[in-house]
Length: 234
Image (cartoon, rainbow, N blue to C red):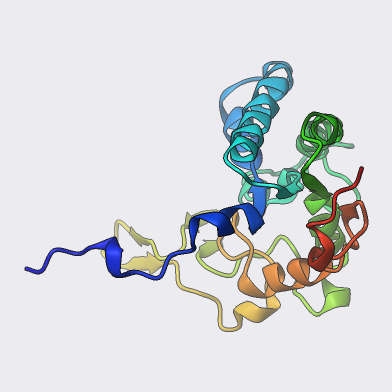
């Protein structure tokens, strides 16, 4: 067999890495894992360490010549349909007005508050960088809270998988039943009308809706479009 080589690939020249826009999106998996494995107090106590790792990554990129950063905060994890599937008969106040787990979203918002504070400090620490803080939480929650208004089905519905009568089969999965039959987890007929693809990830249509509002600066600090992200804020 012919040995594959990257030498023949068209790669950016070294100097172009300094002109690139670096999008940094870290935190949601850390929070999701923490919610499954530790108590809220322990998870909240770990937030500064998570953010420190993000900051160190940005600082390292800066030392290598990166100058333009788009830093996303984390989304409303309490609205993920995969989480809501397991909730039955919640007590008053457990869910917010749009059916999301309030305590989980509170943790996400605390993460975002601390992240924004560190991003503001990074602007001082990295004086030659252009750093944009992007409020992914607000964009996603805006879509989830008004899903039907924007042409989507109810936000907690999942496109891919089987979730009926207390039976949950993941996207692409197959469940063998005792009677010899099987239940599969196929895609829905029209993914373009769903916000959630598999209960965790967003559909292409939802991501397109979110991206179209992020790139124009509607959810950014400073409120500038992505075409101007390379301008420093100092």
